[in-house]
Length: 494
Image (cartoon, rainbow, N blue to C red; front, side, top):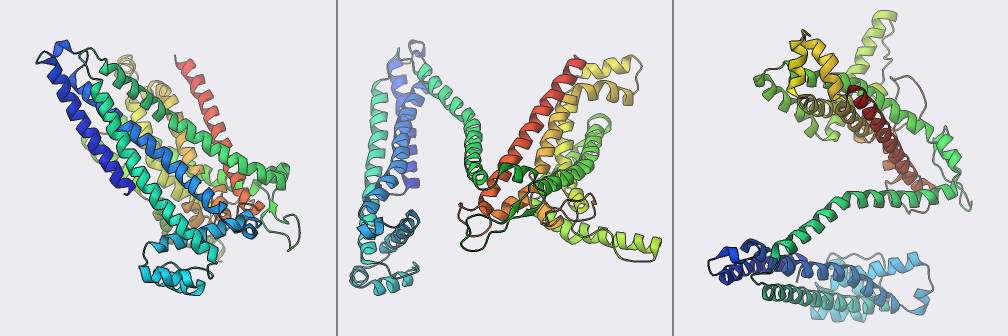
């Protein structure tokens, strides 16, 4: 029985539990609901919760524990010469056994008999069923695949039985617990409170998990490459030493990548912040309702465009346009029509990324400015200030903490952008101040280092985690600094 069908059965039992629980509460009340501690819906919800919750817990535990037990059992049946090999070779053998096991489900009785008779025949039969193998399977693999297939089917059967029994048992016990004085509302609200706490903890636990995973692999990288070479190195050239060497000959300098990240982000903010902020001020303070109802949705459409589309726009339109314009200007001044702006450059990536960030700045700033109390505007205008003076001296100081938060979100978005940089700024890790030349960012190199069939055992791969934890620290510092600025200006305004 599939997991989706089991979930459907659990949902049906839960709905039935709700209906029967509500009906029983109404029957016990005898038409006098005041005799019940809670409303009938709470009794139904109580039965539904305890019909669904135990079944889901059983399913989750079984899904986690069963594969571990099956894998341990199958690996325990390996021949001694296989157990003596490395863990990687054992994993490769287990993966092949898993592929054979999946192929067994599609074979007829005659094909199974032929497959178990000869390894070469087994490979041919499985390939005909869409399960290609890299080599002829060893005899023990066929036996282990049969055991794996049998245990997997048995596990699915036991899971179905346990889940249905748990759901029915929970429904029966909770249904019998219904009584006029039973505190169903307290029980239901307690479960909902726990659910809300769990939901609010997901973000924290996810952040902790991300940081822990990155930090663990980054520590492995720093055991191979000194931290000072990474953080203060000025050359990015992650090569490997010749075969047989014990260390990498590559250079993993962070400075060129960090410089490109900050440079491109700075250019993007130069484009996005003035345009977005002025647009927000116009739409919140000057535009009529008709103009605002049309202009704001059109502006926010930019936020829904995929970043890869912006990358194509930069590669095909903006980059060649800047290159041709620079060639024309150079020709008018010097007579040499060579372009001084490359199609892939910091300027190209910054302009296109800034266009992408405009709706983030404008929409968030517009909402923040609109939230400033109307009394502040009326008081300033009543004292004789003009509309522009009111905006500069009253509204903007009041909205400044929120605007700083909006700009922080925009900066974080700019730092984490990848596709626009790949297509508009290139992948060259270099240090230079000319915005007309290509550079690259940390995120681009993370993608490059994790592209391909690589093992997480070399500095070339592990450096991606060091780059990731560096980006996390940069974002954290931006948040801390933003909090400082917000508190400072808030105290001055209050």
